[in-house]
Image (cartoon, rainbow, N blue to C red; front, side):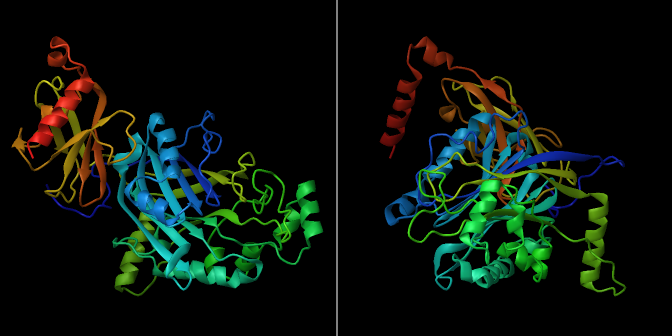
Length: 477
């Protein structure tokens, strides 16, 4: 297969490019080391008639005691398990996640968008205790969504009223030091769209406790905005001025007594504050320059792309969810509409299951590269049950280069051994995983794997057959 930069526009696109809209549901929540609740349906708006295309969930203070943290490095932590088990049956898969001690960031997508989510990378920056301890800092996931470079940054910044400037310093440090292996967007600020969210810990200063609580009781939140530290810093910090935020038309989300809706009644009586926030930044348009240097060429190319493939962001909802009481913070929800013209409209690979599939015979996968991409001997095709949760949730797989047979000039075929195909059968899909692009770049239509006729004829239960298979394999070693 040919090699080409992953961000080249697709060939043979129509001259008139129409923009499309995608719904993004974001959650930020400091969970204060609590175990997850039984149900997060209201947090994810699962009963809403409008279903999101993407979910981005950022948590802070996920419990990270020594024993739990070690086990979480091997298995998904309980919070991740809850969101995965909730969203996978609804046809969302976990595209990426990153954990840095108490900071957790999860990115989910509807299955249909997955072949167009490419070049996924995740990283983290520690700022707690001089950068040596991960209790504070930022974790990020960046990716290309239909060719547009997006970055999601979940932060937990320094606490306490008097440290507003330190919080700003931490944010600038994270923005300056996080880098990615991507020529087009090597830094956070280079991305077309950045979401910055988390427990940013900015407080309401100057106003006394009585006035703050009076405004909350009367829902006159706007009287507090001018003394919100983040809004105040925006007036003098150029970096912050590039970020947008919806109006804070919900009550401050910190600090509550546990298992209640009562603000801090302890001896400390901390003043309520909007510590939990979601902001976004659309990259400012490049300005043409007369000098013909390398940067100018890059800026002109960037300007042309922005004009040809526009991207707009609209916030549809910015609110808190008051029903959860397991933490001293309330979760904050932001729902956005991303309106964009797709740079990529065709998947890199098409693939499908050839003929009848069952555990009785080896099966054939046909695939066809539709766009140039940097192929690798480590590329593989996985068999997944419909409703799978992540890339690693495959039933079995085959290496693309192993046993590869030229079917014709374009179509390729590979075999998948019958030993690993489920004897009970079921609805499945095939996914092509690109090692170089670190993502799934092609998904087949769902197809039926038939129940094993051998198992039925011999009267064996699938569980027994699978058990025998495991025993047989263990005896080989």
